[in-house]
Amino acid sequence: MTPSPSNPSVKDELQELHEQIVLLLGSDAMQEEARYDMMVLRGWLLQKFSFLGCSLSSITLVQAEGLIEAAGPMACDRWWRVYYDPMIFVKFTNLQCAAMLMHEVVGHLLGEHFSRHEALDPENKALSHEGHNKCQDAAINTGYKFIQENLPDGCIHPSKWGLPPKKSYEWYVGNRPKDGGGQGPGKDPGGTQCGGGSGTGKPHPWELPAPGKDVHGGMNQAQQEVVQQTTATQVAMAAKDGTMQGSGMGGLTAWAEQYLAEPKVRWQDKLSSLSRNAMAQAGDQDWT
Image (cartoon, rainbow, N blue to C red):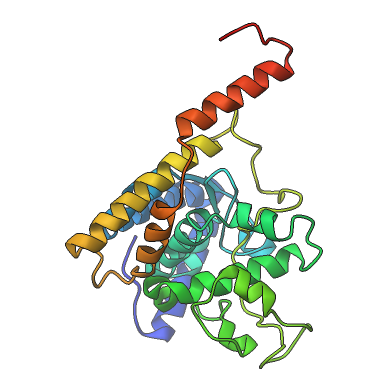
């Protein structure tokens, strides 16, 4: 990745030149360059936010051509895969890409938006899938300073609804706009949302199947809980030793405290229970 110039006109000229080069090189070269850029981006975030090392290392990155036009620059699924359009490094700055990746990992995945959506409105009766995603984005985009300051212009922000920042996803659902357009209280916030994160309903066309044989990456529920537990512990330690200070991710401290305070079923016990249930359903109960 290369530094992005601050002069807008120079930046636009360089972006146009970059797009022309990409067209000349072809799709394969563009995809390979994007893979390298994403690897460097994740490495930079791992160095900057060491307390998120477990989470950032555990995601599976999947290229999805055309995602920008279909839904947004990035998206995630419930199996901890993050999808990205290979054109993001052409259309956005490095910091914007970093903020978008943090939006997916910290906001949607660590925030457990998939299960929270299902608990709140499993059949999307109160709000559409897109509406839920907007409410989630409103909570994420104002909950973490690093994300808020570095996202591209035009992203979802609750102020466009006439609502206060730093509220929960559920709060925004309860106080959401009641009609479809404009600015101010009761109006649709507009803005660019991420490609997905709520996870309820039919999978999007770019999403891969659930983890399994011959399926690229992804984590099951037990694996996700191990990552969340480890991350919460690392965040709590970073808050205690001062590593979190000045990171722009201070909002994670409250999440970690709440996560660690909640009674948890050990993932080993949950996995054992799932195995027993599977065997019982198969008619094989002759075991101890």
